[in-house]
Image 1: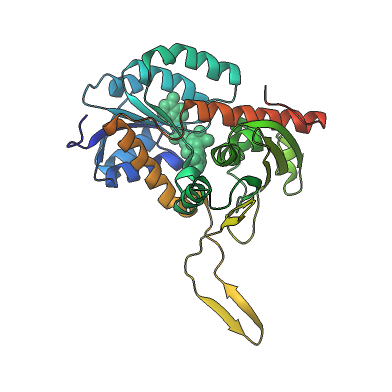
Image 2: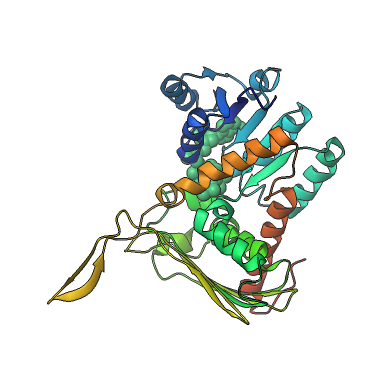
Length: 335
Ligand SMILES: NC(=O)c1ccc[n+]([C@@H]2O[C@H](COP(=O)([O-])OP(=O)(O)OC[C@H]3O[C@@H](n4cnc5c(N)ncnc54)[C@H](O)[C@@H]3O)[C@@H](O)[C@H]2O)c1
């Protein structure tokens, strides 16, 4: 790879989010989608036809191609660890969807195997790359609000995930709130203690599948800052994603996005605006593109990604602690 040639990608996984990442790669002027692969051959053939890339019948076919620089892993969570290992061993730079795996032991075993190869490996915590959240973080770092004391994070999904998703997902903490846990670490540093409660308030089938649909977590950072995360699998007014950071010299807030900024003010009421953008692909469209740009930058310049393997591991560790806290009713130090 070089700064003058587009980075050649293979995409593993052409499902819901893989298709979106494939389109972003194909439309990025510094990248090119060389190949896509999915164990569901139809999904890969469809995406290959849409984006004009080669369809690899197996992962090895793509990994054995020396002209491919990087792999984007967007397959189901249970395949990430194995595909990371094979891609790194094939000498590819890797951008992998969250979470690395649902089992911390497996994550650590993977790291022991690949660390000696000094991989360029990024975990796709897209929210770090949202323009508003990134600007908020930069302003914290500049000292604008002084020492951070309280963070309030709101994370409410517009609608329940597709049927069957919950069972293999890892649950609300490891699949969904893992984004918030990463954002918490990103903003306030290491997390020393986690307290979490959860409930089934929306759909009994989620409880039957062994998961919760509503949760609150309180994290105590090593710095002393307190972080509150509230999450829901249902939100009738769109995808509610807000951040508030309170410090000794003031507060920073980043709010929701709407399709337009038009508001209606009349005798019947004031301030009626569009619903907030629904769905992660719309809300974080700019973030997914910036995430890809960041990865391309890291490969071209040989720099370390912002959301690296350790970030993926730490977010899972916090999610595990949240699950443990909910089960025991106690505050838990991430193990
Ligand atoms: N960052 C985010 O905002 C975000 C959002 C949604 C999903 N995700 C993550 O992305 C991943 C995929 O989620 P999704 O919603 O697109 O799931 P999906 O089920 O829609 O798609 C997954 C695809 O992977 C394919 N697949 C399974 N095993 C494979 C293998 N060994 N090799 C190649 N392809 C394989 C499946 O056939 C399927 O087409 C999950 O890990 C999920 O946690 C991240």
